[in-house]
Length: 255
Image (cartoon, rainbow, N blue to C red; front, side, top):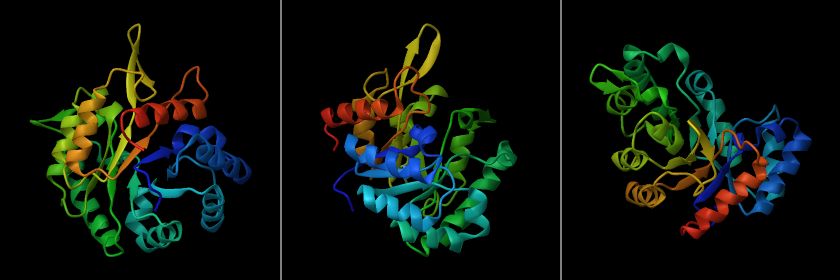
């Protein structure tokens, strides 16, 4: 395991992860920037063994992935074997499948996904859920995100709170992270800035989120991996964006 609590979400550089040759170059650039760990997401087709070799050649570990929920549910052993190959114990899903996006669906998914998580737990792995802002819509007296965590089994249904999207939905990222103590091994770090009337993704520390509060909440909740992602980098090159976020997070005391 790398001596780090920081990782780069490879979705940030998805335009440079389309072919195996691009992946190999990009992974080495991530290492050169100063990251020792990554979350696999948004890359093109490649054999699991080839991905493992490229990661090893770059000197990177995989802290988590974004993996298809359908694959986790229908072929759990395939997911387990793949993640064991990569040395990764934290498969996560990138979002709620569309058919569950209603009041009944949230509760149904929470129960179903808990069973998926229980299967992964047999191999020592966790199942984590990555949110956007639509889960902050209320269904009766609860938001979708509340339903997911209240109706799921806390032993098997973990979180990957996304700081930008919680803020975008009107929530408090620090409060959400703190509320999931013991279930929050992973957190997505994204900042939010305002340009005119537009909410924009920003490098960590370059926007308006309450990073001292978020970092304190992560410590209290037992977060193991702080994963840097930026869905859009606007005028900056994605690698430059990741470098700025890393520099600022190190200045905040993370390594």
